[in-house]
Length: 154
Image 1 (cartoon, rainbow, N blue to C red):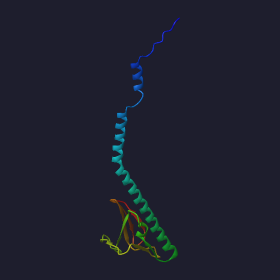
Image 2 (cartoon, rainbow, N blue to C red; image 1 turned 60 degrees about the horizontal axis):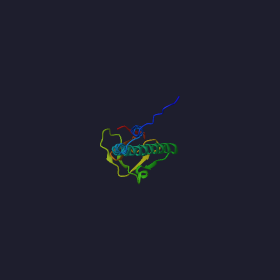
Image 3 (tube, rainbow, N blue to C red; image 1 turned 90 degrees about the vertical axis):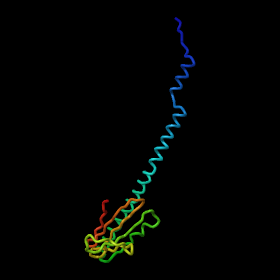
Image 4 (tube, one colour; image 1 turned 30 degrees about the vertical axis):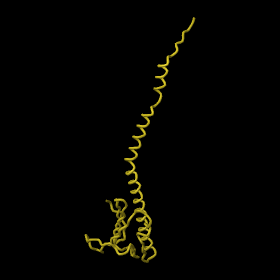
C-alpha cells in the first residue's frame, strides 16, 4: 500500500507562522500604553514616599519625646529636647506652637524656641508640634500638666 503525503502549500505555512507572535505595531502600542500608565502613576508613588517619610519622622519624634519624659521622671531633673534638631537637611518642616498652661481653647502662639522641656514631676512645657512635607501634615500634642505626648489624628 502506498501512502500519499500531502505537502502544505506556502500560504498555509505562512499563516501558521503568522499566528505565533505579535507584530511590531502591537508591541509599540502596548509599550506606549505602559508608558502612559507609568506617567500617570508616578506622582502618586512620590506622594506615598513623602507620606512614609513624614510618618517615620513623626513616629521617631514621638518616641524621643516619650523617652525624654521617662528620663526626667527617672533622674528627677528637667530634660530639654530640641524638636527641630533632628530634622536638619530633610524636606520636613517643623512648627512648634506654645500652648498656654491651663487655658482651654486659647490660641496657640508660635514658640520662640524649638525646645520642649520635661520636668521631674512629669509635667512639660505645653506644645503643639506640626510636621509637614509637600502638603501633608502630622501633629503631636504635648500636654503641659501630665507631659503626655499624643499623636493627633487629622
